[in-house]
Each structure stands twice: as structure tokens, then as C-alpha cells.
Image (spheres, rainbow, N blue to C red):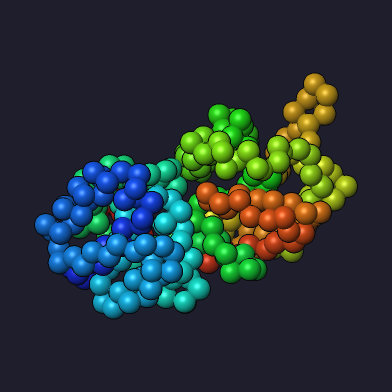
Length: 284
């Protein structure tokens, strides 16, 4: 359910990568926000200053002007400070922004800035792992390399078009970053134990090609497991839903939103229902 924002005072935090990548979009966003509300503009030079500015926001509504990594950084900081419950984030996407757009943020600085001024807070589910990391949209095991970016995951339930859109958007995020992704090993069969709410869905004796997990709404995660296909036949994906997802295996990596992590031998993700708020356009 959406709730209207209560403060007309904004703290506009402009990520340094956004200033370097597209200064014109940053200028437009700043002008629109400043014309529609009382806005304090911060120009942090790095992650430490970014965190300091966010921590000193006071009663101002924080607006992040930047790419998907800046959005994830802001949510992570607020989560680790246990301040997500009382803070609605806004974002004006600049740069690689497939994640923000998949969550419903408009593309383009003018439309996104107007959504900040005229939109409403929507509470969204969050995946939190056992190292206090967060996942806003989806995670994949193993992380897909750049050459696989055009391949859409198989077996997403046909009744969940928003989930198919989210996967496509996140896959597109990979394409512009071939240099970084060349360091990620090409995906291959993995032996993983995947448990959902304590129940084993697949065990180490059954090789899998991929595992995807996403907050599915209503406080549950949607899990898709693609077993290794045999010669001439494609294995049927295994689907499950639950609040807690545990993956165990030998040194696996995973992509959470736009960031590759690992290798780890065990990771557990828990859904926090309505854990964070994002300002989005009003319906209609």
C-alpha cells in the first residue's frame, strides 16, 4: 500500500559517478527538484561522504541521483543503521538504471524528478542475507557473464509478468559492463543444496544450471531452480516460495542486483516484508 510523503524538504545526494557520466541529466534533475521543493544539494566525493550525507539528513527526504549501485548503497546503509522503517527513499536514475526502472521508477530526469515531488511512498519487500547484505530485486547463482545477457531465464511463472520484466531488466544491466564481467567465471553445472523454509528443494546429488531468487511480494521469495538438462531434453524448472532461502555448496558466487559476491559455501536470505520505502508515481 502506498503512503504519501510528508516532508517537502529534500536532501538531494548526487552520486559522483552520475556527475561524471551525465552532467546534463544531473543538472536537469537538480533544477526540477529545487523548483518544486526546498532542496539541500550534496555533492559527495566518495562512498564515505555519501554515507555521511545520508546519515545527517535530519527530517529531509533523501533523494539519490545516480545509478543502480548508488540506490543499493543507500538502501544498504539505511538497513545497517536500522533506519529503513522510518525513511522513504527517492531516486532519480542516471547511468545504468535497469534495477531502478524495474522497481517502477520512471526513466529520464524530468519524469523521475516529478515522481519524487508528486509521487507516494510504496513499501517493498527486501531480501536480507546472513552477512547483512540486501537484495532489492533479484539474485542469481551462478552470476551470468556478459555473453549470456541476451538469454532470458526459463520457467518464470506466466502469471507473474512483473517478475519476467524484472529478470529482463536485470539481465540488460549486465550488457554495458563487459570489462568487469570478464572476471566472472562462465556459469556451469553446480552442486547446490537449496532449502526453502527448511525444506530441501534440490540436493547436492542433482547438478543445477542456475538458481534465481526474488522478493515475490506478500513476504515471500520466489525461487526458481533449473536442473541440469539431459541430452536432447530440457529439465523442468523447480519452483518454490518461502520466507527463508538457504543455499549450500562448494565455493559458489552469486549476483545480487548489480553486484557479484562470493565465493561462499553457504548463504541464507530472509524476506523482510515491506522493509523499505521507495517513492513512485501515483497509479494512473
